[in-house]
Image 1 (tube, rainbow, N blue to C red):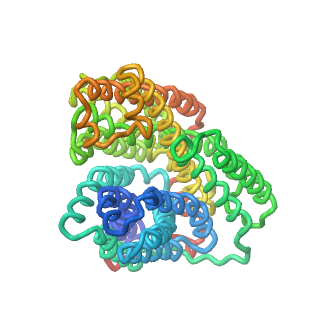
Image 2 (tube, rainbow, N blue to C red):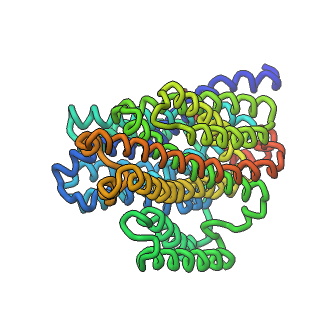
Image 3 (cartoon, rainbow, N blue to C red):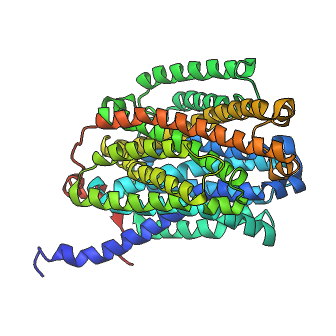
Length: 522
């Protein structure tokens, strides 16, 4: 057999192995993304059995906070000690947290074990992105983007449906136990098929940087979570969190300039593309999570959809996002061009959010579905391209840090978006209820702008109509501000420099023993 024929012979088993590895990675990502969606529908049952209604929000907050704070640390550990073992560790930690959460006998135990689960989830998310970044060159990575977008759509739509079905038929504990067989399958697939080079480093872990970054992220996430809800924006608690967060952030930046192996090397921000795409990711998270929070509320309150149907009504946005992401990925793979996608996506997000801001009490589900499809197309052009550009803008040895940083900025952006949009929504609804229903309307929404269907059903017709108009007015404000914020991301996209994507040739440069290898036994 000639040397020119050998690559063709080896190509098919390698492609089979890539598909198996990608299957395992997508299962792992699905676990991390699906969990909160499933648990949301089980929460009323959990509270009924364990009690602790006043600690209910911490079941979600503990998971989200642990995920956000651990993401950059997992990314750096992968860069230092090799991604495969670090990734497998995160899967085991997630599964342990799932098993313990399912066995919880009190709300305090559940919150603690959810935090452990969240720590593992942080490693799952960044591990998937980092392994794809090391295994597949950016030039070829686009064709796999549709898989990631598909996982997101499955999690958004399937989570509430699966969670409700599991809780009704098997009990809420199986909302956690269901992760165990699925995670075990991912664990086996990754262990057997994926072989990445083992790394050894003499450098010490940047413990000071890790602690300071954790304090900074925790303070800022709690600030945006509690501000305007549990505590007033001008309260001592919120101001204290702001001061602590900024002080920890300043200390972290100083510590990173002194550390031998910093958790977040500041050198990666010397790349203009990386800095710009981090900003764009932050703004996309800001607007995306904001819209995903208030669209179901509008559908359930104004359009009269059930909780289950409101999830299904998001299909136009999610399917549009998945389809466009697949097309963008294929075009990027075939042409190597990518700048057009964040620019086009930024424009469509602005248009989509503006169209959503025009919705009112008489907007049909078909019309709102078309508006959501425009927004989904914009997200599809941007969501996975931001990760590709971030990874292509850093050296291969920093790809874990690059992936975790891109994920972190999007996560923090989402936290800020939900909080600030929530404050805008609440203020607008309460003002509209005061104007439309007088003192009685103001009293009805004094404790919160989001009322459950049972409470709304008890309103007299005039007051119910006033509340529908108030919610429509609140969502108008949220989406309009979202469109205005998105203009900054659209402008930033124009300044991206379309540097060549690393291809197979560039990836082959390191020594053979340093290359990722896929088992060809399959």
